[in-house]
Amino acid sequence: MREATQAQQRPPDWGNLPIFPLGTVLFPGGALPLKVFETRYIDMTRECMKSGAPFGICLIKEGAEVGAPATPHDIGCLASITDWDMQQLGLLQIKTRGSQRFRILSSHVEAGGLIRAAAEPIADDAVVGVRSEFAGCMILLKALLPKLPMELIPEPHDFDNAAWLSNRLSEVLPIPALAKQKLMELQDPDSRLEIIHKYLGQQGLK
Image (cartoon, rainbow, N blue to C red; front, side, top):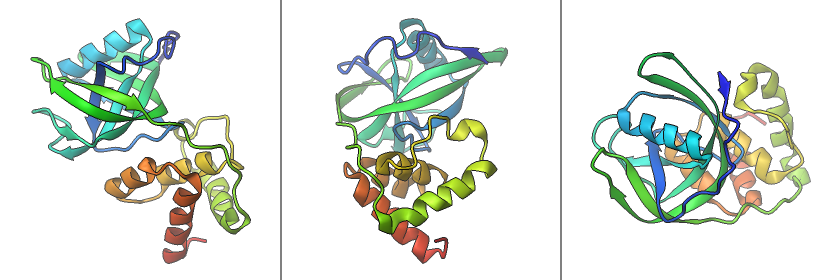
């Protein structure tokens, strides 16, 4: 992989943000590798690598990842390209890192099928500590970490931060994509962690 040294050097174009609808939810601080092969997304990726600007990833609301433009959920997460490689012609492999959430205000589909949106940023979660009753969530993630691919939860780790902890657990737990979307949309990290805590109790995992 080749490091994308210009990534995140330019802020997002909130008035014309390229959108990549996926069947996966990206969380702030999350790592997401992608294989890009459709022309519209290869062109988008090249544009973002050249400019250093991020693109938006949204969970698909209606449609599919390939083919006709899918309808995305209104709330997504910015993705910055950190590495890329093209070992096979027409197949671009990239690594991305999630940053700020956003809300789509309006969107249009270009002739090539790429969705562009006018969007507004959503404030980052407050930095709050992990409450004592949620300590089991921290213990579980620490236990899971050695069993997960290193690139899935990149450093720095911040187990004492309720937002970081709840986002990472939301990523790795076997939760349906729509439920992950609802967790990502929450603006209170304590509420997100409380829901995860209850889920773990229901699954007998804490």
